[in-house]
Each structure stands twice: as C-alpha cells, then as structure tokens.
Length: 113
Image 1 (spheres, helix red, strand yellow):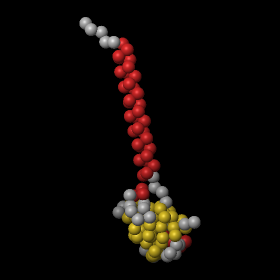
Image 2 (cartoon, one colour):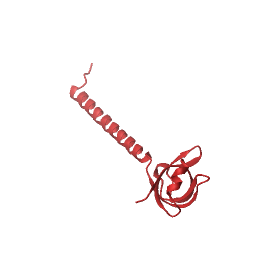
Image 3 (spheres, helix red, strand yellow):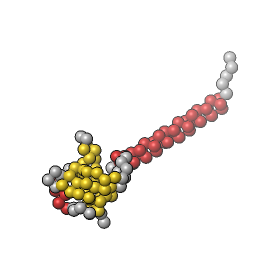
Image 4 (cartoon, rainbow, N blue to C red):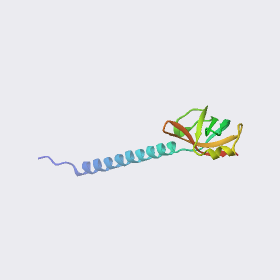
C-alpha cells in the first residue's frame, strides 16, 4: 500500500483554507456594497407644481439611486400634506421617496441649502 506524502497533504489543506477565506471575504465585500447602494438617500429636485388639496407635488429631480430611476419630472404623493405648506413652486429641495402600493410617496421634504 502506498502512503500519501504528509507535506503534500498539509500544503493542500493550507491552500484550501486560504482560498475559501478569500472567497468568503469577497462575498462579504460584495454584500456590503449592495447594501450601501440600496440604502435610500435624499434626492435633489426642484418643485414645479403643488396640489395641496390632492396632496401631490410635481418635482423635476435628479437620479433616484435607491429606486434606479433616471432624472425626470414627475408627480409624487406627499405622505403628510402639511409638508406642502413649507414649499412653493420653484423651490429647490432635497427629498426622500419610497415606492409603496403602486405610488411614489415623498416621506421627507427639505429646502435645499
């Protein structure tokens, strides 16, 4: 019966644990990158129109990264109508939007500085 070289076995075990650690580290890094890019953030925009009665506002906005939406002008629903009292057409704003029940809802609206 032929014996396996102990040095060869030790080298194989060392290499296998080295590569599995590198793969795990890469997977963890990729997951962190995905989590960071999917976190919602404020988007820059300009208020074009406000309909206080309907609780809607039209905003020309930049890219909404967490929703993978390109820059455009569109109508949003205000989560709280009272936030519309603090702005007027032409104001530069930063806002947070979520997609919920088929609607684009502004949950945070701040004047741009």
